Image (tube, rainbow, N blue to C red; front, side, top):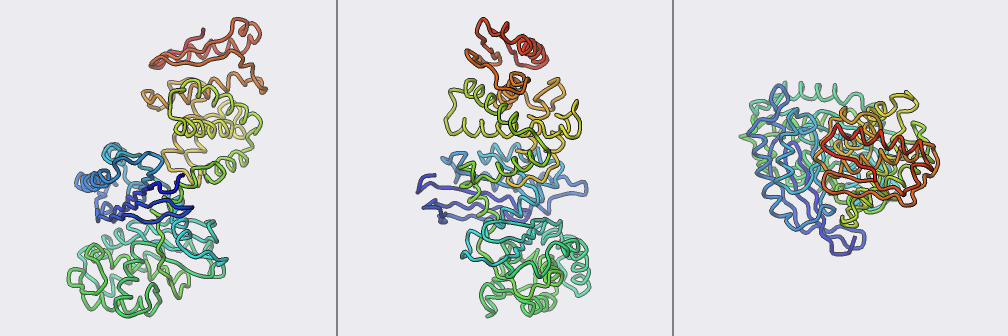
Length: 494
């Protein structure tokens, strides 16, 4: 990453969409622009957990404006992440297909724990470095993330389905503030957050920080009222609670420091915050500058190098946990990568490195299902990946890996995959060929082996004496030619 490079993060939150643009300078990212729009997509989930057409349109309109600002950015300069509302939405694919086209960049729906990890990264990078053990709390529109960490390492991470938008809709539906509504909202929040008690003990952290959303809004109000800037304590929460009860409704609430977009969801947010204080025994919460979008920006830097890319660590952890043979995984990865570079030789070098890296992860993981079943290990491996807690990976990234693992052997028609996606098909074919060539679990003879593509026809060229020298491999390759006849692609041997 060159000094002066612009980086951007897009956060598709349940209440607001945010765009953060920063300039990279000697390991730091300095803000150059920040845009925020209140989209309230979390309000747009119907009883069947489908986004309404109006909610989708609000999101698309906002992304169109963000997309205009991001014109000229390269793919490796932008990270767009979506959180709880799109994790829940049953029709999210419909929204995301158009959203991707409008924004011009992929949008990753991240898991709750991955959201928590990125939140911690954002908070930690904008705090002075120390040895303090940190509790980080982020109350969003439809979820609350809790993280225990130290330095830049997030230890315990979890996401709970309770947030300012969801709780305001459920317990303050007409925007009316009553003592009974607050009591019910806090009890309900504690019921959801109660399982955090065992993992987030008061003895496990030294300082508590709050990120973004509700916590930032409450800190602003308390600061405008003359309380210590950036601090939230129990007395301040009680004072704000009394102000809301005195106003009786959100539309009559008049407080210095509160923004119009927060007025409608402050009741739900405050009730969740009070419940969090009580359950986790928090006396003082420091409002942090960092947030999810900052974590996404620093994650772009980490992904520049395999040694700092947490996804590489995650893959190694999964491969080790499920006892995959590291020598065979490395062997298959080398061969698959060599074939992919032949097949996509005209690609941009940086992009080809990324594609080969992804294929290498699939090679490392292709045998992780072997401890469960020898004959169907590819199916079990795919299941593991689709359901694993995998820090660093967005859900679509992980599913793509699971499809490569599922498809690395056996019949191709079982794959629910897009065979019009040239890159996926090329990666899948290279992985399948590598597994065949390495079937004897030793380095294969690749002298004179060349893979080339002409549209949907891919030719594997072998030297004249190769089939006779390696008859079992030649047989398996002929079987592979037959397997691809069931797809829109043709594999030929020459």
